[in-house]
Picture 1 (cartoon, one colour):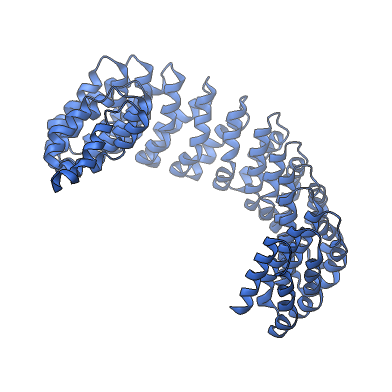
Picture 2: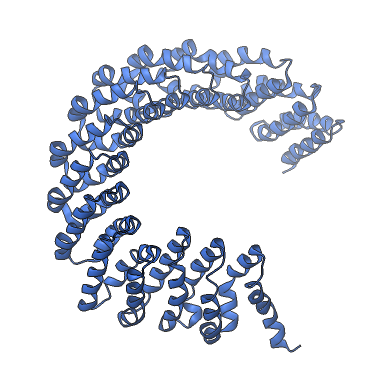
Length: 583
């Protein structure tokens, strides 16, 4: 076998694999099509590989999807943009298949190739392909063609642009709902490429017709283009053309259409401005919050933060907050969860603590008592925004009782969220108020039945030690915690040890060396190997914080003793800790 034959042998194997009966082998080869093409060279790729691939469009959907994607990257290997048109026939075939994923990938690759072609090549090869697909009897081809007009329009001559506009208009009026739906979905991208005068006339005529479609799936996609069209039209055009459509759609008989309006409302606000929003869109938004479908209410509530920030506190107070208060008792837990996020995001809009106490706190407290854990979690995770505004007195009076109750919540994720909030709460309350009201919870969590809570509690003590200082650890934490070091359950002993190790890195050297270190070293006699090797692991982190003289006189002999332990893991971690001393 010659040297050149040996080089091409792996390529021949890959080509053979394209015909293999096993789909996994075919997929493997299809993903290496670029390697095959580079080995064959541009000419053989155009004359042999591409025709072969054009005949391979009857494969399984997964293989066709990979093929469509790979062909989009084939321009360099067929000889550059000059020969890119050779890639269009197989992609045209793939754009007509029944499977949606394959068609979408083919359209994506066709657009990618078309963007690289010049105007002459587009008119000679790409435009006829788009026209053929748009006029094909089977609807799947017409659906694919909807996504191909925008990329061709910009580089085309005026005569071809006219043909493209006529073709797209016909697709928007197609008798098949799936085609009209695809056209509505592509309307925003298509409109971006059109001239300004065409936008105000032809595109808005198409938009109006799609808005009146008898299929709700078409209307909802027409709504989906509102924000894109509004940005193109500007304030004046959006106010006259888009706003009336949005107002009409907000009371559409299909909840999916109303849902899409809720998704688009904030983008429209940005375009039409605050004054028109306050006059025209607030009523629309309030109606969406009161919608009889829970999905619409959820979508509207999720936009509350941005919408209220846009219209300001006064209008939020009079028009929107009453709706949110009503929704805090909604029958749908998902609505209440969305409201929980919304009220916390809205809070910074109000500068006056009295307004928050009167209008927001009742909603927050209602949601903190909700039976659904996600609702409570959404409040807890955003408490920082409210607690910074309302001040210490309102915090202690209204929120603390609810927080204390949630600290023992039956759902561990709620307890975890409360733990993560404690350092901020401690800074706001101060050391004395914190010790009186919440201090015992910090120790109590160390004995929680959930390991994640115990670990978080140990880290929480470290964070609090950083804020309150070594004296707090010595006077408040250690007296309550050290008597638990002999807990009968080894997992809880390990948690206490974890807390000791965590605080050891932030307290003063005196407390570390006189109180924490001796307690940590007692674990070398524990009957459970897991506890002993955990002590060695923690010692590795503690050693850099201890005076070198004490390390040599106390810790080093302790580690030497641990290296003679009967358990292999204990000996291993003891050696690792000793290497820290040597390093």
